[in-house]
Each structure stands twice: as C-alpha cells, then as structure tokens.
Image 1 (cartoon, rainbow, N blue to C red):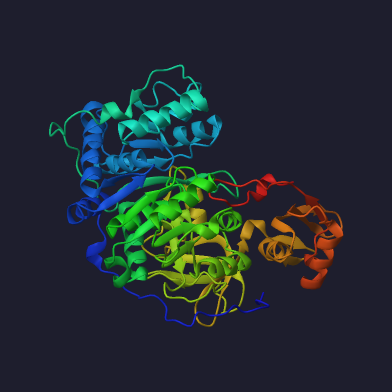
Image 2 (tube, one colour):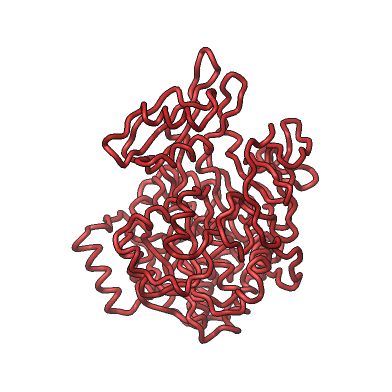
Length: 552
C-alpha cells in the first residue's frame, strides 16, 4: 500500500553515521567514569535537594556493598525496583548494576496480580519498593522468592527537615502509606554501613544482561526483554552521537517527568545525561501540573523529555505562560505519536520545536530521531541512529520500496538479546540474521526518514481495506472541542470489522453528527467510524499511551 500523503522532510542533514567504539562499556564503567570526571557537578535533584556526582557514587557503593555482603546475592541475580522517580531510584539502579546484578523494573502503580507475575517471571532475589506500595507485596510475596525486601521512604536521601515534612504529609495528612503485614529492611539502614571490601562479585561483561524490562503493555501480555550492557551502552553512544559534541560538552539541565522505570526515560534521560555530566531534575509526580510548572520556573532546564499527553496538558495548564523558556534548546517527544497540532502549539508557546523520535523496549529503546537542529516538527520520526539499519517489509517479509507501507524491521547493536525464558517469542520477533520485527507499520520517505503509521496488531480491516487508527485519531483530535480520540476495530457481519471511535469532548455542544461530518470531509468512506462513543477519559498507561485493548 502506498502512502497517500508525503510528509515534510527536514531541511537539515541526517545525524552522524559513526560512534566511538571506546564509548561502548558496561554501565558501571560508564557510571564510574562520569562520577570521576564530573565529581563536583550537580547530578540529580528531587524535592529541591541536589546531590553531586561524588555524592551519588558514595551512596551507590554503599548500597552495592550491602547487596553483596549482607544479602549474599550472586552474580546476575535479579533485583526488582518498584520505585517512582527520585534519588533512591538512581542509587538503587546503579547500586544493583555496580554489584554485578540485574535490574528488573516494575511499575509501582501496577496491581498486585501484575506485580506478582513480573516478580515470578524474573525470579527476583531481592525487591526495593517505595513504602507507599509495599502493602501490595503482603499477599503475593513468596518467602522463598526474595531474600530481602527493602522499603524506601519518599524522603530518603533528602535533608532532615524535608524528609520530616514529606513523612508528615503522607502519613498524617494524606494517609497514603497503608500498613503492611511484614517488617522490611529500610533503605536508609542499607546506606548506613561503611563501604566494604569483604567480598566482590566478578564484574559484569558487555554481553551480560543488565536489565530485564517488561514490554507489551499496550498490545497484550507483557514480555520481558533482556537488554545487555552492550545494548544499553551502544544506544547511549548512538544518542550522544546524534546529540553532537557541542550539545554534549555544554553543561545541560534536563527535566525528567517521565518514569525512569520506563525504558524511554531510563536510556534517553538517566543513562545518556549521566554520560555527559548533566544535571537531571527528577519529577516524582508529573500529574501535579502546578508543581511541575513551579519546578520548570525554578530550574529553567535546557532540555525536556515528554510525551504527547504531557505536552498537551502543560499547554492547557494555568501559569504555563509564566515559565521562562529562554535556556531551553532541546525538547524530545516519544513514547507515543506526537500530534501535529500539539507540536505547533508547543513551538508557538516556547519557541522550541518538538523533536520526535522512535523506539521500542526491544531496541533499548531508541531507533530513529529527527536532527537535533530541526527547525520545525516534521511529522516523521526521523533518521536511523548510527549503526542502525531499517527495512520496511510486506506480509511476505520482502523489502518494499520507499513510500510503500509495511512492517518496520530494525537491526543494530541496541537490539535485545531476546525475551527472558521465552525462546518461542524470541524466534517470532528476531530473524536468524538479526532483524527485529517491531510490529509497527510505517514507510520510508525518499530522504530515508521513517514515518510511522500504526501498530500492526491495531490495524482495522474493513472489507479488505486497511484502516490505521492513528490516522482517524489525528483527524478527530484536530476538531475543535475534542481533547482526545481513540479507534479500535469491532466485529461486523458485513465488513468483517468496523471502526469504533471513542471521543473525549471539551465542549458540551459536541455531538456524534459533528464528528461524523468532520470525518466525511477528511477521510475516505471506509475509514469513517461506524460507532462513536463519548467518554470523560481514555485509559492510559503510565507513559500516556492509550490502552486500546481496554476499549470495547
């Protein structure tokens, strides 16, 4: 199928095509080098408290020593992190890796059943959990599963007065820390011991697994991607090559409102900006828009990471216009498609374009990005990163020409080893010659940029014609009075499937007939929704993606 409309091609050159092989190291080696080189620089801030690189290294070494000497964990044992953004996450993440162990990221907002599945699948040996969510472990934790559970308080690693205020707010005012049936070790206690040389595990190698990262949250049962030190380090090197020397050598301040337990923020923000010695301002609760805007006003970041729903919410928030954007030079959008209308409003409001990229968990995650010096939102997700190959394949797995829609295949050093304990699923998505079948549908422009169309599994087949939900959603979202839209396919006796549209209106005057008239004026007949349902909200995952599978 040919693409009906071409997108505007960026007027600047594609990213560089090479990376320095010396930059590909294990994650502990990268961390140690950064902490030595940038020892006195501010590294991370949370709740207005900042730790320098030397401070973070000190805590990481203490936590690493505790895992090895106290818990007696063995090489490549798995440690689950059930934590939101904050200083404890950074220390726990690098501490686990420094000890030669494997990080397993778990969404703190997942249900107890979902958490149990992930802990069981990964066969974790220890768990680090925010005390607000520790009660979820009461009924699911098998005493034989984990050697220890470490409870983290939201105020850990903060000054006493801040810690006391946060503790009072959560326990007395909000009652947001439910009681637990078990007593767990505290994170503060694990950091109270002195650094120890009693016992060291062999350091991890480049091809050892560093991270077990769950994926598939929007399309089906989550699977666990095995990402090695080489995968993640290569992706960081690729991103740094894309950013360029002038950006990486300047002292950057990045604001990170996206969860670090998600691979997008983990690699694009945490790992990459540690590598260049940046100051990372961590946002624990991005839904608190008033607090987020206060932080933006106070820190005036040079870089910002976000998703479409966040940018849209910020633009509509009170006092957004009071933020000083004069130092902002880079805004990266990913995780889900950026809508052209949101991108245009963002650039008008801030003077800085949204630079969209593309990635997936199985690729560590970044695959493509628009040039950092792009002047406007392009509508494409840009060029492949250095050492990354792209191929568009038809249903017979044969390559297709530019402009023809097919499945996106990716090959490069960032592609995962496979799915944990799931060779059958691995063989389904990774070919014998190393190509990753992404499940995403798109096409290449003549300039070799990638335009994404949709998820292969979400395509609706109406009388043999393919309807891409993202196209219909974009058309409807552009209608004044609509804040969000989602499309799914439903069974239909006559056409096989029919298009069902879910709309979140902002106007009481919005009707199904108004939506249909707009669709008739902008879409072919087979793409027009057969059913329209108005809702107050759409189900979203933690990153802001619409959970289409939850819509019926």
